[in-house]
Image 1 (spheres, rainbow over the protein chains, first blue to last red):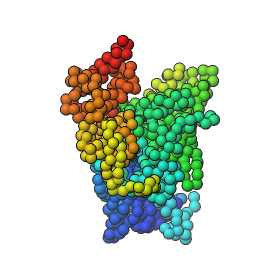
Image 2: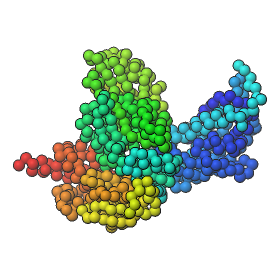
Image 3: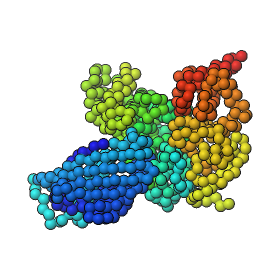
Amino acid sequence: MELNGEIQLAATVDEIWKTLNEPVALRRCIPGCKAVERKDTNTFRATIRTKIGPVNTQFSTLLTVIPVSPPTRYSLTGEGQGGTSGFAKGTVKIELKPNSTGTLLDYTSQIQIGGKVAQVGSRLLTATAKKLVQQFFETLEAVISEDEFHDPKTVLPTK
Amino acid sequence: MKSPAFGCVQPKTINDALECLQRHRPDTAVLAGGQSLMASLNMRLSNPAILIDINGIDDLSGISVVEDQLRIGAMTRQVELEHSPLVAQHAPLVSKVIPHIAHPAIRNRGTIGGSIAFADPAAELPACMVALQGQIVLQGPDGERRIAAEEFFQGLFETALSDNELLTAIEIPIAKHTQRFGFRELARRHGDYAMAGVCAASDWSSNNLIDLRLAYLNVGPGPVLAEQTASGICRNWGQNYDAVLEGLGSELDPTDDLNATSDMRIHLAKVLTRRLLEEWQ
Amino acid sequence: MMNDSLGVLEGDSEVHLTVNGELVSERVPVRRNLADFLRLDLGLTGTHVGCEHGVCGACTVRLDGKIIRGCLILAIQANGKRVDTIEGLSDDGHLEDLQAAFHARNSLQCGFCTPGILLTAAELIETQPDADREQIRTYLSGNYCRCTGYHAIVDAIESVLRSNQEKSQT
């Protein structure tokens, strides 16, 4: 399935770029993520606990960050194995466009869910994926506004 | 297709249950009727460390009228609601809705509290509570609190219930003699999850429709209250409300699935609403 | 034995319940459901396991007199309760009329769904003695049959309802 959208963030392109490449930030943003461990330059292993309705299970995901065209184009691919529950594969492509109040983050995502969770939960898949993607970006917005990822010296152009 | 291993506690009182939730959070699951949880465990979609079986807590059962409220204990089985004269008299919408829930064997175990706490978007009881302006009673370490059904359901399987709280009862304002209720749903087979459904509660003054609440199921991440459509129908009662009904789609938020596309769901919601309203004309 | 209601039951636990009128005491895995308990621990294989998530009805048994899904309840939850299976209800003659009607009208072929259907039909006859064909079908909507096409099943149940009505009129 495809999930696309855009979100206006009160931050600069560079701040967002930095956050998206930081494992600590990814751990905060990915819903249910318990730990993110870097494997090499662009690969991370994340442990995720999903608790949505009937699904309450933990699984491991391999995340690949592809800096397509720094600092404005970025892609994040995840491939998760949910053990007996099934699997999920997804790619989120992000484009950052600076504007007068910060940055417009434009995302397109392709998500594939298979196995038991897809079979049994087919009526809930789109709604669940939508919810998780929304949660990711909402948390990103919150994380970016924190000092750790936000350079207090940055001055955003006023409207 | 066998459940994974878990530990199980069987508290006998509400306070003991709260103690268990506190002790073992967050990796717990509360076992009420089990008609959704057990299925999920059997399919290994769910893997909680501790199950808290609340079937032994007597204080969670019972249907009674307290002042102008019908109070229903969370562990009241759906079959009890089906046959309760108190429910038929004071919350007739619940009596209308219950026979549409799954099948008799499921209703003999399933509970109203479980259905509300689980908040399946296709479930009938959550939409029913929103239509009836029910209050959800929660109990936690800081005591009891009440939250309006409309605010209780917050997203896909998301409710205001915290992982150290128990849903203990539902309170519904008792039906006035000026009120009328309706329910329609469409499912492929009897007992299937509905493709779309609507719960309606209305108030009348000498044949005039003065208030209407329309709560829909399976057209969004939770029950959807269509306020604009309902008030539009009220204003146009006795005349043509086609234009109002056309706008229903903008208040709903369905997704596509194997059973229906979101467009089809919106269409079905309009058809069901029309059929329901025609009963009152 | 200490009765600590906050103690966590893990691994195996003891259950004491009445099955088909007999007191039974067994040690079972906490995670075992009632249908598996009846089949594996008690050898009562008349209760069948189909979908294991409550929709097919093959595991239908009686708990304290009401039909439930054996796959959707833990064995340990049946502690202190009464369970009746197809074996018990058949042996004590409870299902005699239904069984004779099913036999006469060829309402079973492979028989996999039959125990669940008989238990459900018995509850229908008890609770809705005036049921019509539509109501029979509605009550049985939670029991799947792959062989018969349901028609003969509805015929058999209807014939029992009719004959009960005639008997109560004489």
